[in-house]
Amino acid sequence: MHASDIAVNVPTVTVHDPVAQAVRVMAVSRLPGLIVVDERSRPLMVLPGTQVLRLVVPSAYQEDPALARAVDEPHADRFWLESGDLTVGDCAPRRPVKPVTARADATLLEVAALMARLHSPLVAVVDAGGALLGAVTLERLITSLAVFGATPGDG
Amino acid sequence: MHASDIAVNVPTVTVHDPVAQAVRVMAVSRLPGLIVVDERSRPLMVLPGTQVLRLVVPSAYQEDPALARAVDEPHADRFWLESGDLTVGDCAPRRPVKPVTARADATLLEVAALMARLHSPLVAVVDAGGALLGAVTLERLITSLAVFGATPGDG
Image 1 (cartoon, rainbow over the protein chains, first blue to last red):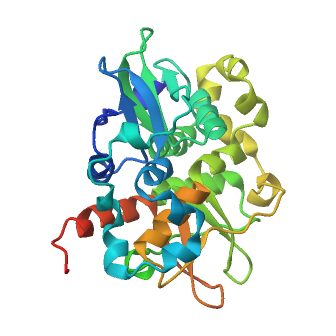
Image 2 (cartoon, rainbow over the protein chains, first blue to last red):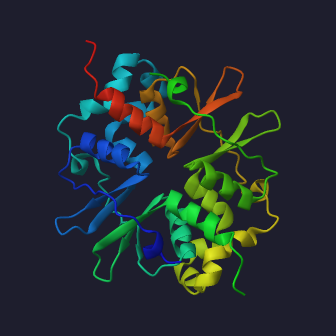
């Protein structure tokens, strides 16, 4: 099994999309993270879902649980809409990080090692030129390991 | 909306379960992580899925992508079964970390801030005595935000 065998097509976002739109894309497609692409559809960033939350949760609440607790329930249900016109690019980490990518012929072990090392439940699969071919989610990887690892060996 | 409104029942593991069993539990229940409980069913650790992979991917492969690439495909499909009799306790982080928990009455903002701060796509919901009531997954949280945040406000 290779990365290309278990990769799926996923919707992507760009740095110009509003962060609220990024949250909706994750929700609709039930993704564990988001791939942010450039104008040529190459992965620019691969954000774990928890880091997508970092885009929408005001940092004061992330740092101070007591402050988050003081917000009443109606506002706490809608905090993420207050990001307004802020875009993914406005909120993304300033420090450039190499996107989490694997080649189409990477083995499941390589993908698993990559996810483990970089704490990323989402890996962008790219061709030799860096163009996006699809994505491997942690769920797909774990399911593939459990299903295919359970079949009789060929040795 | 409170944590208890969107929490779901999830299977748990103990430190005595084999790591291969932990992977199967994640696969079958499509969980983004695992809750490790003690003998009184209280959360001991909440492991993000990528850290569950750390339990099964030999550390040499995590550290050296070239080494992982050198493993042939049949073995790369089954590497996780080589953990054999190793238990979750054998492989879990040595340094004790407070489990990622929220109270039943925590708001969605509190849960989101917790997930963002601790990089955890899974939060154990506990009662005042620390007993496990359920879990909030990142997917449930994001879906709840997207669905309920989109309804007309009450202000």
